[in-house]
Image (cartoon, rainbow, N blue to C red; front, side):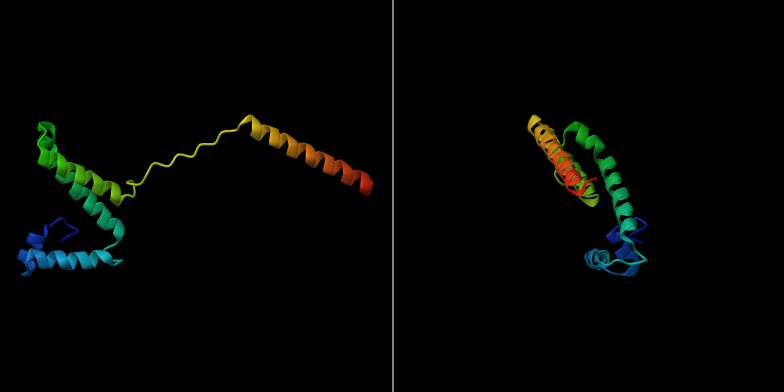
Length: 124
């Protein structure tokens, strides 16, 4: 029922448990990897729910309602965490300096000298 989008209150009403008890059970189930409840399906369901909540908050956010803005921010944060996009941005920069080029030239020259010396010694 949870995967189908029912709330904990709706599930509790159907199965005869309080919504708090349903939440506890669901929290434990979500910790387990299960063929009945694969994490990708949970992620997909959660994503859909969060998008529904964001849509419901749109008018309040546009109006500048602080509570709606805060809730929308928290939903956005949840989505980023769900997909691992809440970490710092990684940028890999490589820059070749004149010193790097000079070192590469020195290494190439040393390799050429070593090859020449080896050829002289072995008679190649």
